[in-house]
Length: 282
Ligand code: C5P
Image (tube, rainbow, N blue to C red; front, side, top):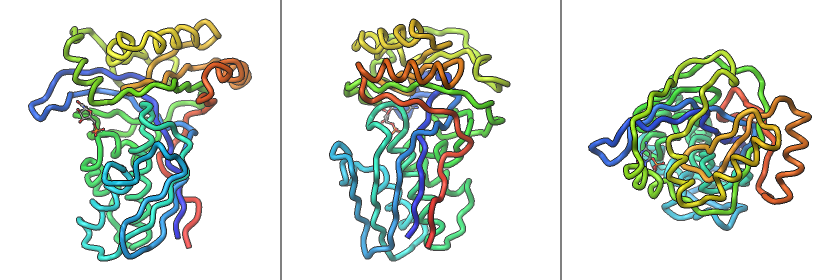
């Protein structure tokens, strides 16, 4: 049995560079792992099975953790299966890479369980087949993601910062956001690169305008977080979650206590240096 923590991510900036021939979009983004996590337990089994604490999570072939286990057994030729138990804390379809983090945990966990000794780079390549954000979730910490998101280079860890993350109860599909992005696309001069502090990052997300157009509530939420005392606020990924960078933990706690009255899916988090940690292995 192996038990892991799979950390959510936020995009500190996300630039969409253009549309690719394969239908995906070329992006350039700085991603950051945060202290909001799912717990994943893996047990050797005859076949691949998934159980989850959140009924919103499909356990069939749409499940990213299941897909990761399938890709892993296919590529390594391991003839055994795995029972995957997901204790979900990360909201689903929220722009926080919850599904990708679970997939990353399955790849790292199965590699340990079956002693297959694949390198991190090899696991990241398997992760690409499951989803664009899986390689980042394997690398974790602070990273720059390019290509369709799967080309990850690690960046120096940013100093400890606190964020209030808020997930509105809205269904926003990543595919829908990218499809509609093309209608709003205008070339803007942006600078994605290495930064010494979170405050010095020019926070922007090109996907915001698509989601704001359809869901005014998300734009309002961003403004509300600024009015409440956040230094900066931004939608993460394809939304609908919005995070606010707070000046310190104390102010973060005040904002969190207030915003959770309207938005029950709110979290006070800090940045972390890893995407996956192993809690138990026996
Ligand atoms: O890779 P993932 O399965 O997370 O992507 C979901 C959908 O989002 C894709 O099928 C694609 O339509 C869109 N997408 C995109 N460009 C990206 C990432 C995702 O167009 N860089």
